[in-house]
Length: 385
Figure (spheres, rainbow, N blue to C red):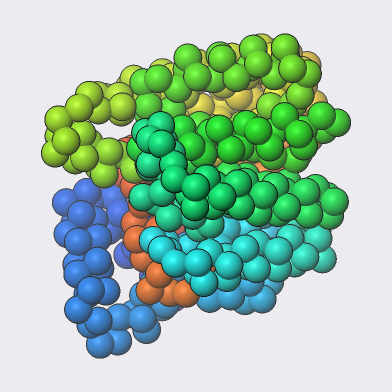
């Protein structure tokens, strides 16, 4: 029986760091306060509020990010590796629109691969919108006719992404493609599935992300499982609940179309757990990267692995939680020899804020998890008196 009521990582923190974490998770637990603080952060970025960078660096950024550049992540990575916990590296690249930014992102991805190989890290994260303009991705998503220049650009994007994936594979690094907004997700899915068919013949090097807060994703998962069997390639799945809930709902209301997101959290939880069961049933053709802070879903996967005689340290299954969150789950899993990779973002502080807010909102039950974090931090502080 896995014990999620301990957090050994807290032993390495000073009392002042524990108090800082305590205040931060108290804010997250209060949904109203969290929404107000999120709004103010975005506003302060726009008006370039003095000292904002310093304040963020010493609080939320310190808790949830590894550093402003890839070399500053070493301390966090070394600490995780000393506890036999792996990392998935994610460079924060938000709302880039010009070719120069896209080229810089591609260079960063190659640097990540080189760094990951050196540090013996298994995963890097890729965001298609870091390589291509969202409006262009949306046009493709809508099946609009592309002009000659756009057709060439699409081929270039596919070529660039393939080059990164092949380079990663040659260096024995796996690529996790982030899911994004529903109005560009079909484009992403098509690009990544094409890469899986080419790269995942012997082993699994390319993973796509499925957000189970969408009511159509179970059907999509079933379809691609069938395709992987028919075409004889490995399916890499990163399973999450979802990261753009409010944005999706607001856009659906504004543009008057059916919202692609489940109406309730219980529906999302149901589909997430059903997806886990479906994946384990078809594990022969699938590699799973399970990104969740939900203890019930984590226990479900653990139990299914035991029931189906899948070894705890099978390379077919990785558990993942965000860096700075749910360490009680991460460390408990590692204690029982399960594969764990903390999701470690890094990048410029101000650019990281929208990303951090979205990630903290990724689970609508975040207050439930922050409550557990609070209890464990209180317990550790009390033990030091």
